[in-house]
Length: 67
Image (cartoon, rainbow, N blue to C red; front, side, top):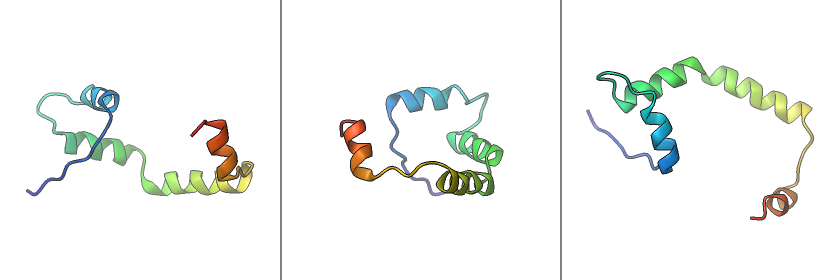
């Protein structure tokens, strides 16, 4: 089976490792996590936020986060 590399921060890898049990692969873990949060719910929440939450200009966000 072909694989790919997904760059993550060391802290993220440590968190991901905590989900690995027994002989589970990272692919197994990620698929299980994504199955628990299907894209439909994610997209629905994103659209709700776009509709209901106050819009922030990108320049303001960068300034607030000191980027």
